Length: 117
Length: 117
DNA sequence: CCGTATCCCTGGCGATACTG
DNA sequence: CAGTATCGCCAGGGATACGG
Image 1 (cartoon, rainbow over the protein chains, first blue to last red):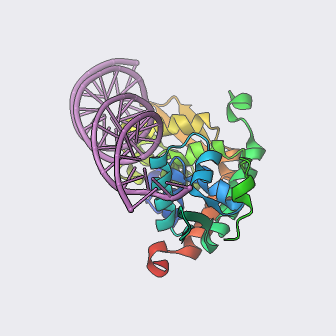
Image 2: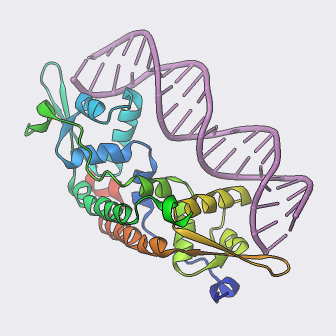
Image 3: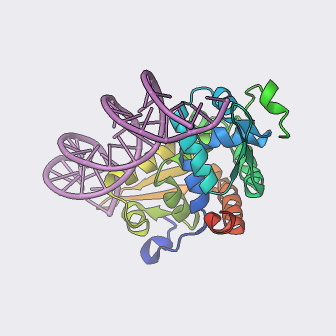
């Protein structure tokens, strides 16, 4: 077994700053919401319809999370009834490169189970 | 409000193939384990020590998940007592570019809450 | 050393009802 | 329309004990 590290290993984790990104990707609905918003701003109800299954509570939770993470901006327009629009911030837009890389990888390696049993 | 999409939106999700990647990133310990393995093969106990907090059950669950996802390879050496070594597959190694992109993003946008309250 | 087998327990998610 | 307020559930994670 070609393993030098096993005997002398120290826990020096690569990619130390990823935590923020993981918080986003960890939440169940964060990605679908983000994906929807990459195509342009949307309002609450519209997001709810597009992401399909999601219920009110989960959607608001997700949006609050993404706001705190700084990737989504919330704008209120004082119409009657009130209109609220969600859009990506600059960092949110930049996050697309992450999603793009994930997509490239997922496409390249397809269905994993198939070929390696 | 500059929103054309809100009125006519259809749910055509970008990045349709990401699901596999999300399965990996979704599990709590998958990333730390993956991160450890990017530096080289490790044995079970060593992984457990390096990733610190993790317990036996969670670690095995995580490793089985990563095996099924095709990113981790498990090799048994019939020593006494038995030795088991975990390493990244080709797709597992390629996954580093995803982690790298996440790291780049997380580093660039740092601590989110601070500046944009 | 490398796990499997249990049990417990928390928080994320779903569903529903209601307010500004 | 855009949420807040509750409640219940249960899958996933933690701790421990034991087997090959």
